[in-house]
Amino acid sequence: MTEIISGKTRIYGIFGYPVEHSFSPLMHNAAFSALKINARYMAFTVKPEHVRKALDGIRVMNIAGINVTVPHKSSVIPYLDEVTPLAQKIGAVNTILNTNGYLTGTNTDVSGFIRSLSALNFSPKNTTVALLGAGGSARAVLAGLADAGASRILIHNRNAERAERLVTEFSQHFPKTQLAAVSLQTVKESNLDLLVNTTTVGMKSDSSPLDLSQCGIIKHVLDIIYSPAKTRLLREAEELGIPSVNGSGMLLNQGCDAFTFWTGKTAPENVMREQLFKLLE
Image (cartoon, rainbow, N blue to C red; front, side, top):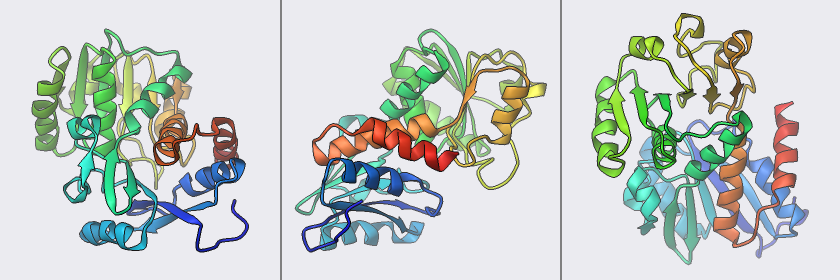
């Protein structure tokens, strides 16, 4: 990390609620230190009702860049000056660059997620995938899978209307992929090449969004939660012999892409990976 903070130190950070669990500060600060960039990355707790004020604060205090996490990835969009085409299509922003008060939003979750699938030796092309959740992360995962050629994606959310709206919206952008809002029972009864959990179920308690032992064939499982490193869903997958990974790869890859978006420099991936895995031990 930067040892001495001065008036020239650039400030980056993450907005979320809650945000105390985030590993991003230590990961990014290690990267700044490795490249000898005079910058610090901090976590900012931002309640949903304060999103607009928080973004005004970025401009006023000249904060150089911000990551955005749950539950703000969609709600920040109306208050930005520019949104990249990809993030606009997804309807979710996870990275914001401040250029002299001009805020540009993008989404690095898509590339981060797709790159993380390499740990499973999994390619989405011509596959059937079930997606649990319909929030900002789910939007990025859905766009990544559809863009990579998944033939069928089933979406389940506790609020069925939210899942249905997602299907209606994304069907316009990805007409070649069959999208369907389904019940949890339908997910259980389907043969899946990949199951992706984008909900927070399992983050704070030893619970799982579904019982894998009651499901049909599931070939791979990815839970985007990275803390705890092994959620109950992942433990169940392991017990059943299903190849599975957590969200650490997605976190690392999206973080590297965000770092490059902010600084214009290639992220020190090995340094960031080493720091992240130390935290996950």
